Length: 69
Image (tube, rainbow, N blue to C red; front, top):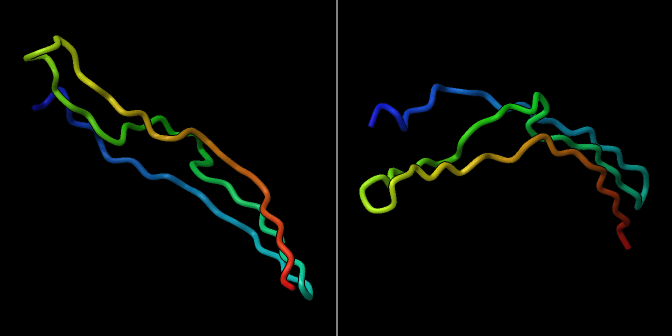
């Protein structure tokens, strides 16, 4: 169905890792441009009268640290 089509898009992410002896750390980010996108769309107009759109994850980022015994 044409109304359910979505144009192409790109998501950008990255990470920087650091290791020193038993310690490790990583700084990471996903969807860094905070692109709005839909991961799936379903036509429910026949039974319910609307379309279902599942929105993709917004910009996320964080730090991960670790220690190896």
